[in-house]
Length: 194
Image 1 (cartoon, helix red, strand yellow):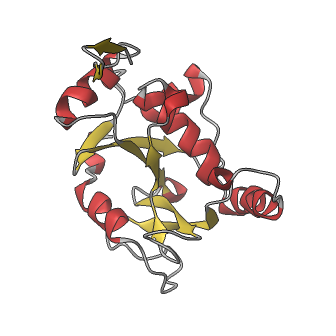
Image 2 (image 1 turned 60 degrees about the vertical axis):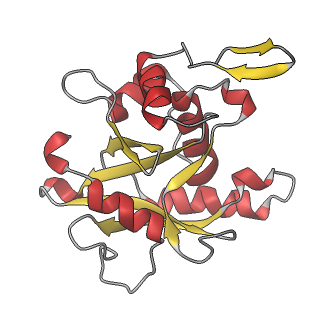
């Protein structure tokens, strides 16, 4: 993002890093870059039934509920929503999409456009994964949570689990609470647009 100092006031300008980021900036219609959310979906066992990956928050507003992978656009992201999504994904749910090809594979639709929609002023990036294992992700999360030398941002989740898009229930029927934010996002996901 380009920031300029005019008359001793910082003026924020739309990011020029990606067309998608510029579009999001203008759709937000409010000052500052805000945040991002990431919805990882899986076509469960190629059945046509989709589930979403949510993480159990350790603290904060959604403590002890399963929530979206989400967070603010940090200074180090330089106003880039895609950079923020990549960073939050790696920090919170331990899915690394730093490389362009890995990001594109998960987040671009068949026409080459990045999948996202706006939810209450926040862009929600839609990633489609093929069988990302909860067991593997939870092992990585557990390792990070035991390492107190890591910054808090890498130890925000207790674990992850999958929830059906159709009824917002955990896929094995466990009674697990989801956040109001995650519930609202799930209600807006249209699998016909994947």
